Image 1 (tube, rainbow, N blue to C red):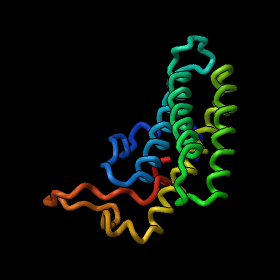
Image 2: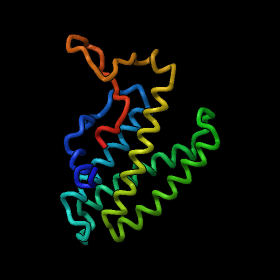
Image 3: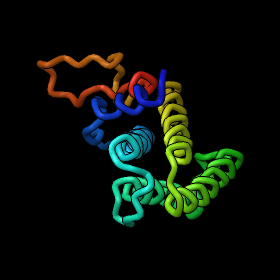
Length: 167
């Protein structure tokens, strides 16, 4: 798929509304995809060369940076043993890379630099969703409906099982 076609698919994403509360990993995946969508829209509709510090490209980069700072802070401060040490260390290394890459992209934005951040967000979001799909306890919280909802049901809509189609 061409980069332009990939980017334009973000504008019509069905994930444009915030997720229902109760599944933190899904919320994190949604936030990553939403940030990636904003980055894609910014580079598609705004020139990267715009020196204005308030340009849409730089605003989207700062939003993504804030998201990754939240992840980094949570991973650094949390004594939660639910996250294996190896995964915690890998994610902190990735947070460090995103920090450095974002500073470079804010200083001198290029589509290639921003596309790298979009791909990172996409891959981590898909990993979070995959872990949810493999989580047997999820069924007790939100029964899977394979992405289909019953219009007569008052239950919250089912969470998607993959972001591949939209990213």
